[in-house]
Image 1 (cartoon, each protein chain N blue to C red):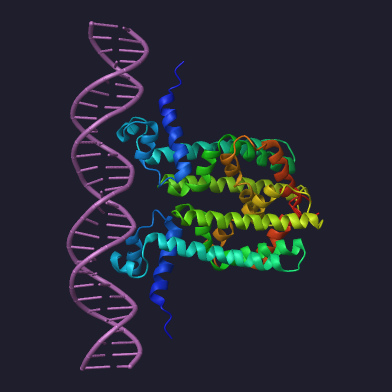
Image 2 (image 1 turned 120 degrees about the horizontal axis):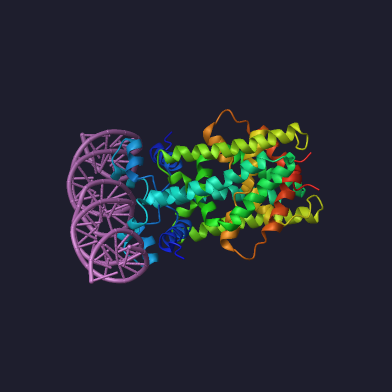
Length: 191
Length: 191
DNA sequence: ATCAAATATAAACAAATGTTCATGTATAAT
DNA sequence: ATTATACATGAACATTTGTTTATATTTGAT
């Protein structure tokens, strides 16, 4: 079977390099060099450098949205939903740390109109999280916290995950990690 | 009195622009244009573009370290210390949101040896937070959480603050914000 | 009024960068 | 064997970018 590997290899090399150096600092020549061919050949696989970024960013964003949508549409209680959202973040961060890294660090490098599109997706995701929290408060499973603050705190508190997995893919146990994080977000640090 | 305003104006314009566009995307010409003078004149105030970044980054980093050190050296209990660390983050983020933004987003653009220096400062800060948490667990005021995870979660959960203040300098009330965040980190979301 | 420091301009530079074009070679299906 | 498709090369391009150099003007203290 032909897995059209060449293009995928190129994209993986790009992803790796962008993660290492940042999007702006990653030159087309550097990617080509890592693939052991000339710069110009890169344009047989993509039509512009921006393409690479857009490709990864919108794909991984969609993945998060899908997970979130399925969880919200379930009949679980709000606390179980929140647990599952956290679980999804841990799992995606574990399986695709470099893509998540782009989501955290490189989305600013998108150009219009993709930039605005992406910012909107990001806002939508935040709104979905807010919705979950609001429901949980109404269900009386969550405290009466400020929704905006809680949304920011919770989403922000899991944004470092990709870094832990990017550094050590094997040593980390996603299941135990999830347990720890859920414990903290649910119950805080105080005894 | 002479407030040597010219250089400071230049640096403020730089900071503003870097916050807007990112360090790499901010050109010396763009800064000069905002100051209404020629590019070359910029080099009467700095010796290189890197200088600008280093200047802001190490200055603000020191500010956080100072605050943390004073808190750790106090005789407060661990939970009160943690509260004060959070308070310091809120205040610095409120007063210098653009500098904090650089700390979050642009430190990767430092070049060696400053890059390694900065990464070390960052690690030190994390270690100080871990120390605080470890003490709190021993004092039995904190739960027996995983120190590494708790450090990452807590520090990460307050990294968005600068953004809230950069967007709306006046509408945000730092005191109330601090209260909300402390409540979440101390007690979690569950009722 | 003089003189030094601060502030500004104009021109030029070397290097880096994304991208294109014309062309060539390997591969696999017909 | 022919042909279409995938994969590759080399040269060249127009811009952009950080920085330097030489020189001028403004400003404030003496």
